[in-house]
Length: 148
Image (cartoon, rainbow, N blue to C red; front, side, top):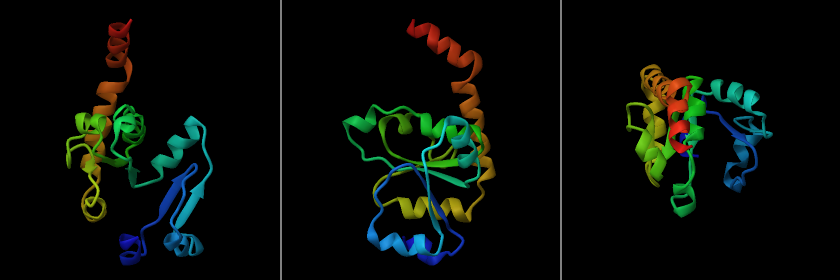
């Protein structure tokens, strides 16, 4: 909210179902927050690629510590930089400021501002390389073979 008040260029896209606090309603009214219905996989990739920053805010608890890194590599593969909550898996794969950003409660404003004001190309390229090296082709085949 604070960033959107400070910078009129900032727009927020919400995909799927999410309750939004009443205080953000004004940004819906001036078309700076858009609600997008659930998407199929390919259309979701297009929507993510259209964004500069992918936010992955999660409550940090036992349930979210069990979630996969899907939201990170979906964004990385289309060149969008992510900021994620400090859950187990995101702390394992994201090097803060190198291939994405990690944010705890109270850090989101600074992390988003840093990414808005700074270069995104290097981070998104490192993330893209990481996704290709770890989630596609031979690397994923080796992991599947280990499981079976």
